Image (cartoon, rainbow, N blue to C red; front, top):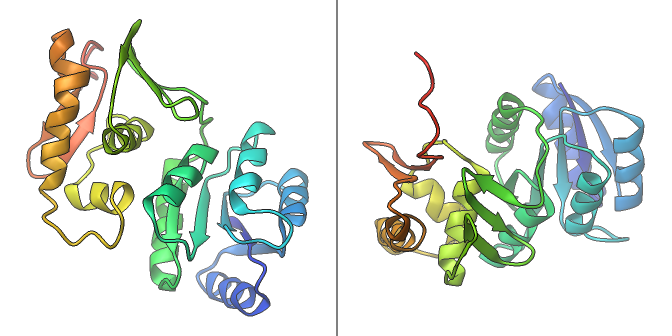
Length: 230
């Protein structure tokens, strides 16, 4: 499996390269955004590990340019900026996952394997699950032609659901990706916000797309679609 590591710090870049190679990855490295874009255009990678802070640009811009150029290798962003706004910005740019420095190499490897299993897939500018649509850039949500007003937290939660359609998401995972890591309250706050979302995206339309998965968490799916065949 081929991985491109984009990191400007020579020490960190070297550690990542050696650590991943010891885990049987084939690793190429880039020290800045321009080199990263060139390497990604010249070669095919199974995943890209992309630092946010680069000397010539930032990882968000690199990620966005890769997606605009049709590059759909899964992207794992690395950053010391640990807040929801930066995570959401990275996801809006087309990143698939987010890891905050300092991190353990075993977690990085586990997340890369998860991205490999997910595979390549285009990330459209507008997210769509059935007739529910969400535009991250314009901050607009619609059910069919009906506009839906959401708070910032509700929007972030729905966006995460829509980036993982039909996938069971635990409360812990949702807290990690939608709330700040400094959040030390009850993870059952997720249930409260799920109820808020249902009151806005489902109940007024007689729908049940945001579902509870017993013992696992929640998932968002097209509730009008035919169930998969056994």
